[in-house]
Length: 100
Ligand SMILES: [Zn+2]
Image 1 (spheres, rainbow, N blue to C red):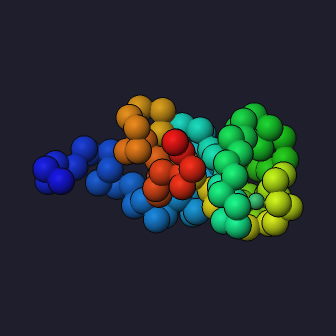
Image 2 (cartoon, rainbow, N blue to C red):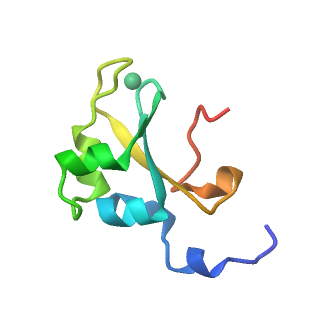
Image 3 (cartoon, helix red, strand yellow):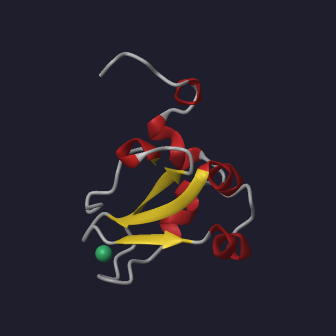
């Protein structure tokens, strides 16, 4: 920790992405869903989500409707990978468990 916080982070509360709308997540980067059961990651094209959900739909609502293709459980967490971030710091609210 060097104590420096980029301006964009000051207003982006990491734990708050579940309250983000689909439109905001699209503006920030790409949306990934992580299965809380088996850890499988699914990167979902925003254009596909937009066909199923209105732009103002919160990520919380979308992740609730995602089903894991690996284990079949509906326990996804939404993760956003910011297009301008690097490595683990690009991810909100945290990097995926199986990112490497
Ligand atoms: Zn799963």
